[in-house]
Image 1 (cartoon, rainbow, N blue to C red):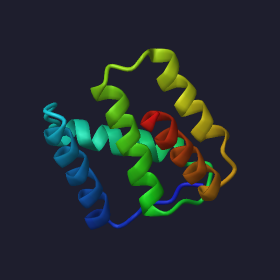
Image 2 (tube, rainbow, N blue to C red):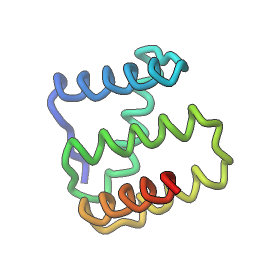
Image 3 (cartoon, one colour):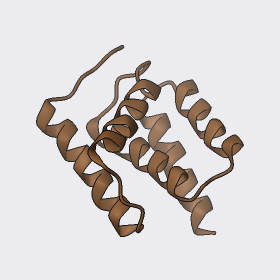
Length: 103
């Protein structure tokens, strides 16, 4: 299920990734932001999803990259997204990760 969003929306998400990376003091160039966007898009390719879900998954990938997360943790996250059956389940995953990170 390949769903493409308008170029302006894609740019906005990529720009947001760059802004977040700057706030994390780990600058991200346009190419790297586009790669994160495309990686998130590929992970979500199997389910219909909203732009916000795509942005959140891309943001989580950025955080994992910026925190130099263990490869196993990143692979677990990716597999959870790929196994999700829909947008709502992915959003629940993101919320559960947020709660866990807050602990």
